[in-house]
Image 1 (cartoon, rainbow, N blue to C red):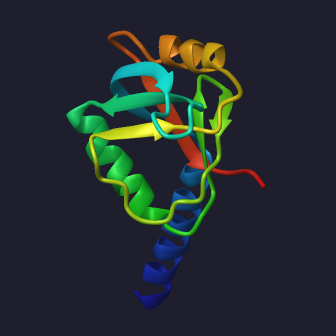
Image 2: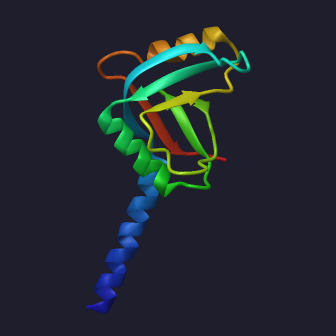
Length: 123
């Protein structure tokens, strides 16, 4: 019985590890390009759906101290290190090159089925 439980636990850990490498889709309610009021740098203000907020909070809780990729489609737009659990409804994507890039990202995160994808970064 003990061997069975150990084998089951090992299988679960391998499955969870493989799933962590796969991007997870998080539902976005809205996205808007803008400029940071203090630095003037381009950014995207993202508002999660209620479901997306919960999913992102759980994802960040599991990955504190790790670098993660935020992706629009298959494109990585930023790779921050998670410093703490992020359970707020709104986040900002910063570190963008131009307002045009911010507008492009916001445009791709707009619509009924808008999703931002997150995964552990591939360093």
